[in-house]
Length: 182
Ligand SMILES: [Fe+2]
Image (cartoon, rainbow, N blue to C red; front, side, top):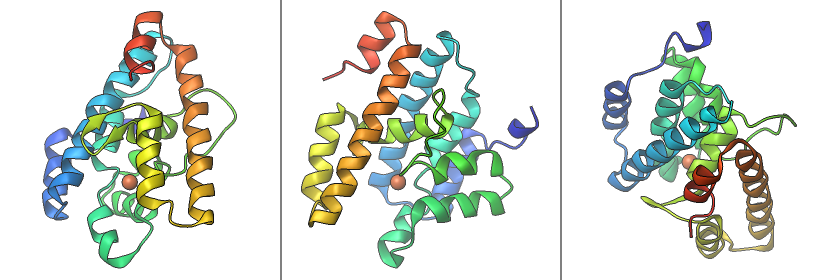
């Protein structure tokens, strides 16, 4: 349980959002990602996974903690968000934040980093949407050249892979509610 010893509670996560001047729409997005990520983790745990829900909650709330700043600086917000959390002593959730844009593929069962990334890819602004709807938006907003289109295409494939792993862990009704949402 040592990895779980220093997880910021929800109040502390909300305080950190304030302290880092998070833009209101990024805050609203993060709160919806959190709600969805915790619901996914709970359902996956019922299917035999062992996600630590307070860690999922905190990582989801804080996954974009440096995103507001990145809009000015152009920094890699997944990397700098993880660095910030390590500096604050929250190393246990830093890896999930680091992976939220491009989750590492360990080749095995669904990981916490994949779960956070997947929840983020299913929330458009502050609404839970299908993978198709979210990626239609990404292509339109960020697909400005061939390189960007290919990058988004790879992320789309990766998100579908994560969903397939998740489906294998969910019972029929959870699968219908979480994955077959349109
Ligand atoms: Fe992000």
